[in-house]
Image 1: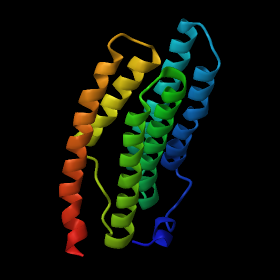
Image 2: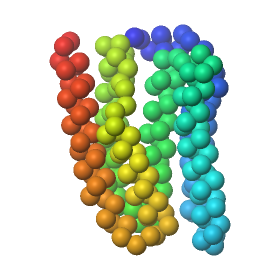
Image 3: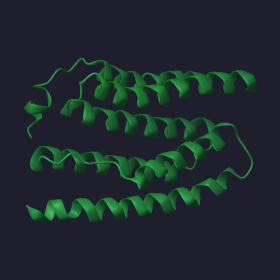
Amino acid sequence: MTVRELFTYRILTISNVLSLSRILGIPALWYILAHPHNIESIRLYTALTLAFMTATDYFDGYLARKLGQETPLGQYLDPIADKIVIVAGLFLLVIYRDYPLWVTVIVALREIIGTVGGGFLLIKRNVLGKPNYWGKIGVGMISLSGLFYLFNWPYREYTIPPLLFVFAGGIFAYTKTYGRTILKG
């Protein structure tokens, strides 16, 4: 698949707009964290923002399938939007909630390598990467860890080791699965 082929289908579908709108939650999170409010306001605003981002993540794929709007661009755009939101959210937590920078750098590097590798597989081998359970559990662990730091809950540092374990498992699983594809030539 070529980059040109990514854009031969409809671009402005409901699903693609929802994927892009998820990224709009990032400035809202920045505003919530950068401008002190009372803790109840922070929890309410954060819950609303995260609910919006979660809903758009669910409905973009659901509506694409339901409305017959699945496109190669959308299949690549959805995970890219997820990665942008995850990395930006973690960097906001580093700045405003003392989230460990080193963990954020590891997550960011993993996402960048995964995106570049996925783009290579898509364009050069016409293989669209599929999510696996390690990735889904990893996103859940990032979310849980982020919530602990966001609300300054006790024992927040104990969310990091399981997160790193799941990430290592995911990296191993993806390397094993897609390494074969790359080596096939």
